[in-house]
Image (cartoon, rainbow, N blue to C red; front, side, top):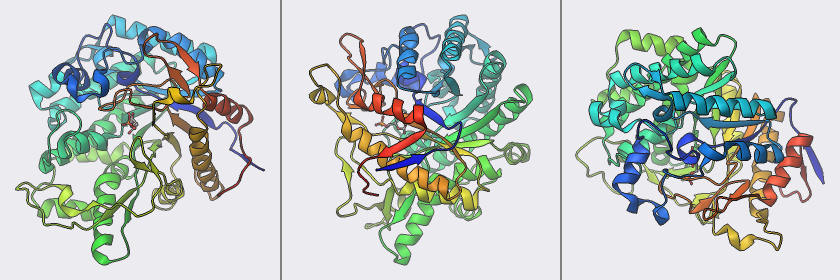
Length: 468
Ligand code: BG6
């Protein structure tokens, strides 16, 4: 048996997001996700949409209490732009939205759960996509900053830790390159680069506003720093992995922490005539307004190789530089199709420590989605998800080792608390510590939730069976 003790004041909890939990009740606007579901419900597993989600809008009290029972000292969710803001041009708030988030903050405070509020979780107001072309538009950056200012002004007196975006890379990748999130474009390479730049700029301008309005708080950005591992050490595979690392990871990481963009990548984008358009003032804003901390979402590694065919599309795309590599004998979560590779946490920690000045960070999402979990229910009605506990144990052991090696990591958030709605997969894969019965709305803590309670209460990971 081994006891791994985590640093004092470590954050223990989970993450969720507004669009995946609240439901669309009372919102003054539709997000791109709401619109996607209204337009093409057949894209969603079992036809389940964000309209109902897990009904967190009505059940937040019960859900926060269950989180407390699972030992949470912290919880991240996102404020929906489409709920908080009534006038998207001026940033004037919607009274019902203000009241909801105020009640949520009060309840979390009463329970001693520190809220981390995120501002954007893939949920652009749809009308801004329609009217302006969404994140391709510089005007939308200003509108986002007005929304951010409203949120900081209203809630910054009680919430001190914020994040500007969750996984902005996914918006470009899934929406503009690979076609699996609305607006479902494929290989619109030049547009994807502009979208990425505008989100990096929006984040920097929100950081600036935050530091003015909430001087005692701290603000970060949540990035999916999925490491890119080459198939082998051949030069062509190394080059493919290097490109992926720079485009998919370092673009946002450099902008957020260093206030600049990877030079080699910018040169390539310029050579290909797809570099973003930017004013000097905006580039200065990126350089002057870096984040206080990073949130790292980690689920699986990315294994890449040089392209095995020649790229045929007319338009430039990052997909021209690599293709995925299926490593033989990799461990897989069959429900989500993602490789399980906890060792990557150490690699991410080393990059942050050695190349990003050891900026404080926390593991802001990590988890395992499993289908048909009801089959693991015992006679008492509790889902016995020992596979999830084993998954977390392995990842936490790696995280603990990284901290021993000097990583400035201040917390661990699982994905997620109550089983929540996901983009295309809707409720197919369940990730929560707390099971949701969609037919009745009832919630029941899973075995992993009890296990997490002990972990959080003792600040110690106890490993019975050491296979590290
Ligand atoms: C993260 C997102 O990428 O992964 C979450 O921040 C998402 O929003 C989670 O739900 C799990 O992925 P999925 O697609 O299985 O829901």
